[in-house]
Length: 180
Image 1: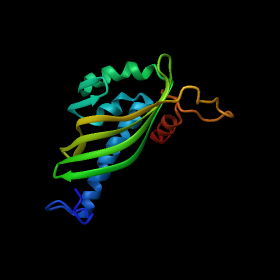
Image 2: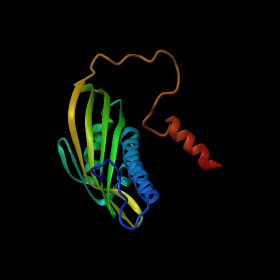
Image 3: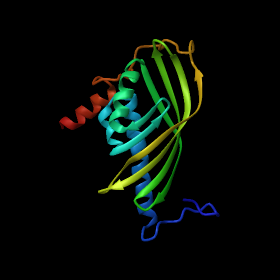
Image 4: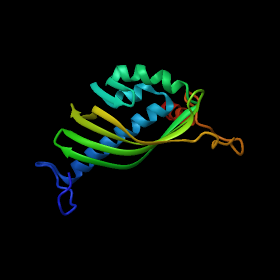
């Protein structure tokens, strides 16, 4: 919550450092969700929500498990997706928070819809339960969509490519570090 002078007041009984740590934890919930969607890692997606979490997307309203069952086959039809988070603002209200994240989501390689980018916002009600911040209710608010059909080009040279399976460079690096 922002004061009329633009300052960010701390919650009663909390310190500015506590507020920053909470805001960082909430930001990381949003980032893990995006990674999970883009890499088809539905455990990461599931972990961004509390078990009773609700999602409101274009064409969907329901619980987190139903959301995953709905989105998984849709995402599998794309060659890939990439979420880029822009503005991110959190209003803390004790163990609850409002998180607003502006983002662009690029989708490519769908046999029917082709390539497109959407500008949207995640408006999230977050709660801290047993020390863990997660989404209780999310609205994926679509602001605009544009067709990118015919704009994708073949990579200019060989090199690392993103994959949505266990061979992505991130997964390989995580495995390497976990083995040590």
